[in-house]
Image 1 (cartoon, rainbow, N blue to C red):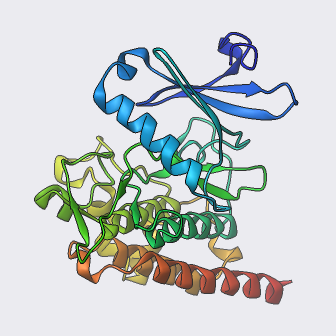
Image 2 (spheres, rainbow, N blue to C red; image 1 turned 90 degrees about the horizontal axis):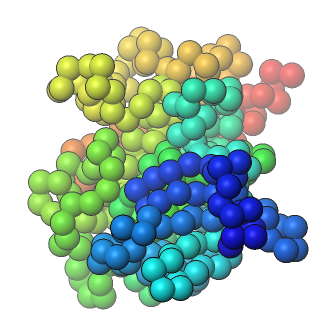
Length: 300
């Protein structure tokens, strides 16, 4: 790991999160990788160790084009490191909310939403584990992008398996990221697949509006993005006012934007039983993507 990152040099530093620091590395084969180094203070705690083991256990069993691939790991004494495929374009959060934003057209945004939805649909189906998997920390910083802006979901440290039987939820203390919390989960402590759907809906709103999930510049009751825009999603006149100015309305299908907004609205409903499944989200986004392609061909 030291050789791959040039002794974890600052030149190879990519970013920092709750787990620790992430560095760009190059293996002896010349393959670029991302190396996540756990903060030593976390590796001594039970929660940090648990997140590390969950990530290794799940990603070693899961395989899907829209999930970031785990290449290897290190668990030597107090050192805990994870080695992933390198995603050249960083995270969706960086492109939407970073200092230097790269313009993403509507087609790219819908494609990112679709790839992310397919990842969650795969997790919820649980084909590799026998149990559905709830990501529990789905957010724009955990959606990574390759050189063609294909999306891959990462960071499974907080993931939970839904137990066998008729149970559709996991009773657990509330963990995740403020702004993406399912209100039903925070009120009851019951984590469900629909908790991921709510977080997915928040990401859809980020893609649609270009706004952060939480904005402290607003009053306390309006800091949350869902509260800011939910009432505008079903009204075309109001909807136009909240769309990210980076999206050119002249060059994309207005019908696809309205349906995208409606999908986001359904995902962030307070009543979790009325939210769509991730399979239904994938089906709708596939139709929207085809609609965008048809619109572009007709316009040329």
